[in-house]
Length: 319
Image 1 (cartoon, rainbow, N blue to C red):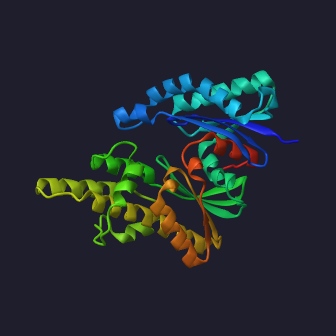
Image 2 (image 1 turned 45 degrees about the horizontal axis):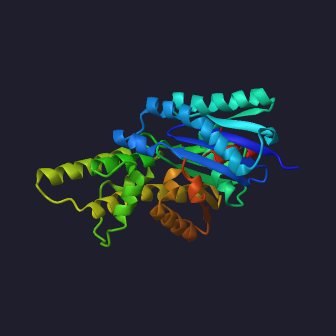
């Protein structure tokens, strides 16, 4: 008899609800995005995000149940993201889910948002530990060693900006709309040249932690110098150059971790994992090392509740 997990994810600006069975089959995964709202402010406003979660969580829950074709009494456990995230936003999904669990007499599981991303690859790929997991998003850039689902150890994290945050900030510097990650990738695809701008020194790639503040500042300084000199900024060239350096740092550190640990499977997850250039580069790096690389389906790269359910089912724990 299949067991069903109902999951909620409200850590930032997406209100999400999903129903997943114990074989990690996704019966429904409903995401209500607030991008159009926060686009007016150039970024996520926590209080506005929280208020919109309150309004959206009930309809999103009802839609997820309808799409799955199940009743509330068919649910065997309920989980929600409880950390990390925007305090008010996280509270909405947690309170809604925990209240349902209490009313139904079913267990409630607290899930680390990052554990959800680590588990996201398992929704579409037959992956089993041990493997390395690179989590690249707007709020996090971390490399984990997954020895077992309940034994996830942090190897490296960012000392300042996250990679996805740098994409958004550079996009803002260049006058591109929010969210900036996809805009930078679209502009970068237009560049067919080979004259890439060197924003930072390559030895920075080999530092112990990920770091994107310097790269972001280097782009800002370049743009300001061009404006002061009255020179044109070639947007495709700047975005392509930034994207190459942002991804190169990830590639160098992952290659080093593969060689040091002897683990030859790399999973790349998080919102930035949807970036086509990143996927291409990681495939090339892993092929050279005789390693394999796996990515979540596009719908599981950004924040979603199916990955939170997967983390609960698999028992993912970050040490």
